[in-house]
Image (cartoon, rainbow, N blue to C red):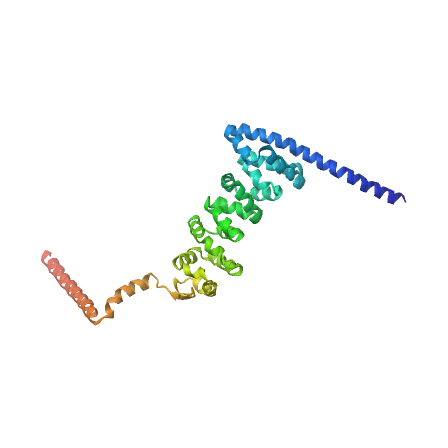
Length: 303
């Protein structure tokens, strides 16, 4: 009987104390929000105050820090506040949905990447909030590595775009941004494979897709392109030929030496050109022999 009574009292006490503790944490976060707003305004001046109000002001800070208190207690609150003071109030916009997830992801970045990611968030806080919610840490990395263009690609291609952006150069990211609307229209299984091909050989794949835009106009074109992926991604230079339906055929592309040989051999394809070319070679050889004879005579005279 005593055990049952103790258990019942423990449950009642837990039910009473849990909301009290939660309220205490929230109160702490509320106080921190006010302090954070004050420090952000002192740091940023009038411009900082204006930007803060546009983002949501004290309401945004309170919501983000209260959520941080729920997810990770006072330690997470202070960590988010510190990141915000160092890199700007826009971080709260991205962190608000899941402070624990954001703080952990942001903390894994190098100082240089943190600065670049914060700049991307400041430029496009609403878009970065949505991208981080859908993609996670890769959204921060891609936006930091490719300022401006990274968010454009992710906005169209989502997680697949973010994963590719983490593996390519900024010039290639710009190229991908031009192709993104067409790639986004490709059906899901094929689009995933196409993006994997871009990750493995970005320059080669995107050059071919830009040169042959009909490939992505039909499912048959994309399917035939993917079917030839091993040959396309391979070490040998290739080109493709596509018919009116977009279906493609992979053709070998000559290397540097082969192109030189082709240029030399091209004149020999017609009889007249071949005779002229052979005559030129004979004349060159005769001239070299005569020149060598003159040089020898001059050497003998000088002795």
